[in-house]
Length: 112
Image (tube, rainbow, N blue to C red; front, side):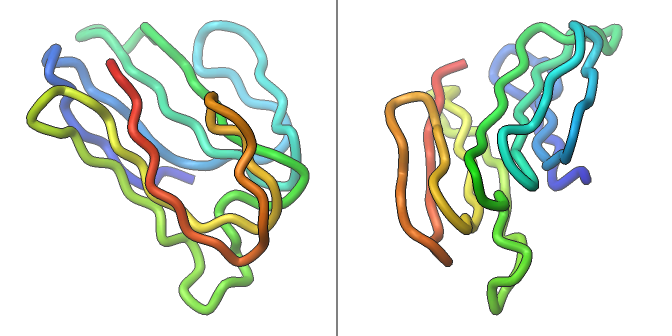
């Protein structure tokens, strides 16, 4: 499911959403770690993937049972960093460690 498309500081499109099971963004199959995982994909001007990041854990990201399910968004900061928001229902690996808890909300920042 697609949540957002933004233009990165590089001028390339960045796509943010969720997937379940196995998917392929053009660079080989990627399997989800849990029920639903999040993805962040930067594409070149022809639509080919430049980078693919996935974030997940044993639960569902986003928490589709939360009072406000999804809660997911993408923004590009003035410094070019990518910011994502979402809910979580269990541990999630975001690259710098594991966030724990259930029915939580997070904001994460990534350099391009």
